[in-house]
Amino acid sequence: MHIESPTRREVCLAILLLVSLLFVSRSRPDFDLPTSVQTGSSDKQASQNSSNVEQAAAPQPLRDRIRWGAGEIPQTKILAHVPGWSIFDKLYLLNGTLYLVSDEPSKIPARSLMISTGIPIENGPIEQAKQVPTDREMQIISRRDAKALFGLDAELIEGVSWLVNDDRQFVTHYYHWSAELFFGFWRAYSSLDPSITSEGNTTLPSPRRMIFIHIDADHWRDYALMNQWVLRSSFPSIGLEFSADWSERAETGRLFVFDRVVLADRSAAMHGFNYLRTQRTASEPFALPGSVNWWSTIRSNVIQASGLRGDIGQGTTSNPVITYVSRQEWGRRMLVQKDHEQLVAELYKLRDNYGYEVNVVSMDKLSRKEQFQLSARTTIMMGVHGNGLTSLVWMKPSPRSTVMEFFYPEGFAHDYEYTSRALGMVHYGFWNDKYFTSPDVPPVNYPKGFQGNEIPIDGAAVARLCLERLTLSEEADD
Ligand SMILES: *[C@@H]1O[C@H](CO)[C@@H](O)[C@H](O)[C@H]1NC(C)=O
Ligand SMILES: *[C@@H]1O[C@H](CO)[C@@H](O)[C@H](O)[C@H]1NC(C)=O
Ligand SMILES: *[C@@H]1O[C@H](CO)[C@@H](O)[C@H](O)[C@H]1NC(C)=O
Image 1: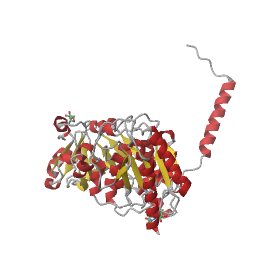
Image 2: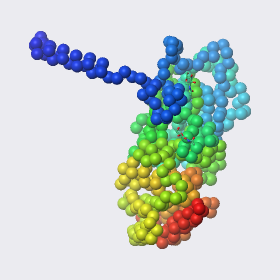
Image 3: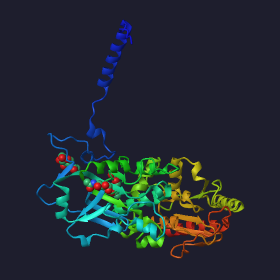
Image 4: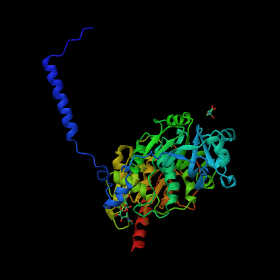
């Protein structure tokens, strides 16, 4: 090969480039991290201290390891526990196995109520037996045994981690994420702050990371791309780790210790009493203490990221907003077409006679931002049983906020009924012209026709109930 020596022109160009690069890098403003990273709070002092970017005055080792040496190994502390949801301080991780260190094993819940093998969940005794956790997933050991196994120190996983032991099976779906896994995580974690305010102010730190033991990076998002919006707008600085990262930690052969971890396991939650009543894994943590405003922290962050005030939809004095989430273009689980048309006509009559805002929408036709904004403003949300109703989690609970869910007659499932009540809202199930509400709900049932496109609804009955809900609460508010 033959390389020509550079021409004068090429040398000049190279020098010019170098000079301009130098200029650009020098003309950037000096970083002044503690003040430039302020979080919007007017309390300068507090926000400076709460940001973690200040450097130490003198060089020192990074505080990312704890060492007990010849002293006592810190025991694992269980801060909160219900089936499937557990909060631990100082939970150990070695070679992919979680260790609870305790000299009082009788005070530790049964292992199968905390964790499972994390395989996909199928019904039947043979499949259930495969979910029973083994020493591979979790062990409970004394301090003495821990000392022999662990050595003198551990790598520290700082701050709060949310640890998911589930298969991807129920994760890649907006409802199962926002109204189950994420919902349950926040409900369990927020039990540590029972005084969350109605604006969502809390003393809890954001979780630093979410760790999926069995799921890879391509299998936590949903087809409507909502899961990632909800996560990133709730906790903008959260980091994610997946199955490959879990294996890498295991393969180091090093001992890790979680400062604080919230562990979720769907299979373990299915042993709980509340689950057996509602089929909702997120119903378990409601047995823990909690603020009535527990969800407002998340709601407020997500709604603000969509561009509205975090408390939008509040109170009972603004003009009511009725949103009918239509599935008529979805192709599955649809209303009888003329019943759909009649319902729309009845709702528009309410608009014309009472001035209510009425929206008839297919959620999948709206942008994500529009979906969050509309649901945040909605007073009454209605529609056929389906994922579009997941948006009810962004409504602002108030004495008149209501969810109306249409089922094929005799059909019923708890998904949206339970979730509405969990947020402090009223839910009505409709069977054509009949409706029911908690505690008088029918048993779970999927009759023939449940998934079909001939679901009947009496639009006039729905409109009458809307009027009743909106006028009663207006009186109650005075
Ligand atoms: C912030 O940190 C400084 C120095 O560590 C301390 O003197 C001050 O009291 C702290 N302020 C608040 C509001 O915590
Ligand atoms: C680590 O876990 C793997 C998988 O269970 C196992 O085969 C291996 O023997 C374990 N290594 C040690 C050192 O315990
Ligand atoms: C919530 O936090 C905001 C921002 O710090 C503050 O302005 C507001 O007064 C707080 N509300 C309550 C009830 O503490």
